[in-house]
Image (cartoon, rainbow, N blue to C red; front, side, top):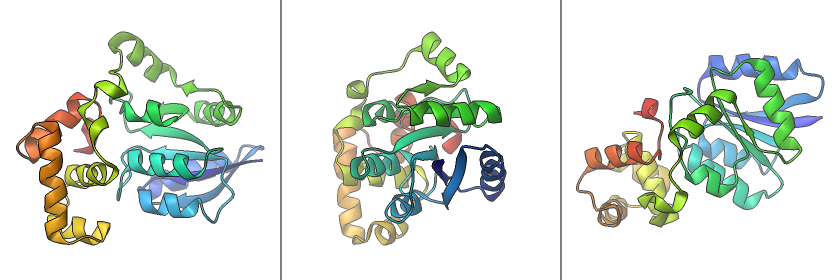
Length: 214
């Protein structure tokens, strides 16, 4: 039996996918997480073989959640789910070792096939994602200016792009407002930008976030 951790912050989506996956004879949804933090915490208590990760999950975000999960759970396979087949795939995910990429427009049988494939150690790209990469190409992880950010700076970027205030970020990261601002302006310098608007534009350009995330 393949144990799946379903990570999505929309209740209707979670409920629908859970029912469909549980209907497969060799797949069971072992747990559900509604944020990046919950997904990371769930890995410590649940038997998980495959993580089905919404790339735009709330909290620390899908990219950071993938990084933490793969860092601490080397045998776990991750499939990233994008909200649209027209959305860019963040190049960091390839570098991290994510094996599957599908869109929420994918049919159920394709999602099940993806789970089975990555469980065997193979990479799975849904047809629409594969066609997009072939036609448009994908910038290398090392070409992205976001690759030079530290873990904490990357977390601050994610929260800025989610529209969090300094106070909200400090509470979530358990840091002082002053420290959060320090990280904020440090990443501005590294990315050669001046404000959050320029950060958003840069993130879209390099596929660091889904355009539907904004």
